[in-house]
Length: 310
Image 1: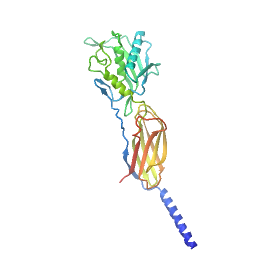
Image 2: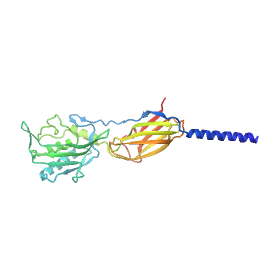
Image 3: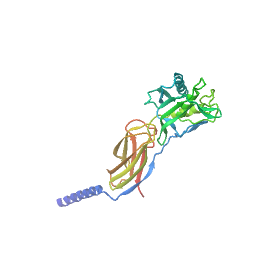
Image 4: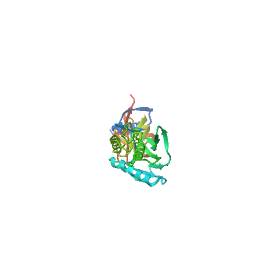
């Protein structure tokens, strides 16, 4: 009786050892296919509002408090008109504010010249301006730097030229409306159109946050082990700090990978081999990218799910 009992124990132990050994032996590589991912759910597609049109889709500075610098060579009268122009734009919009900063730190640089730029038919160029550095993040065209160059003094008491060029820096193209301040021909009676204000308010009401997305993931399962390559991008307005990628096995957490910082418009490629899964019979592998703390523009587009190929 005792011999039979011991034999049964040995058989059970042998079975456990054999199963354990089998579980941890790498199997033949099997590619996984992606079956689900969460895409962008919010609509950020803004290029125009009525007659107000922008150079690019979702073109804006990342922040709402924008710095500017006026070249010391500009006359005091021009400096005052520039400040007045920024004040008018600030007062008309809900979210934008402007402040004066040193030259190297300013997002918008204002320069002046006494030149007279005539273009024929009794027309002249009073100034020019626009974005000078832009990053395409995937969702936004983020303005990093912009510049304004003012030529001859305007004959208007109202800062028509200054506002016109500042709005160019903010991304606006010319307007076909001759009463609009963005018309390509100067008139002292022109003012900022409500369409431009509406578009600025819509753009800058979006909170300056990052937005992480798994743009691509390829994975191979070898028995109980997982190899994968994931591409994580930040398509938001600002840099993403302390980024983490979590891996799940049939819904159960497996492991986290720290990706540190991903700049706005940039991406990271993570290649990992031999991640120890829950079991070799695992069927569904999930990947979720997240911030250690803080909010994103859209937290519903951070997941990718893969399964065994049929």
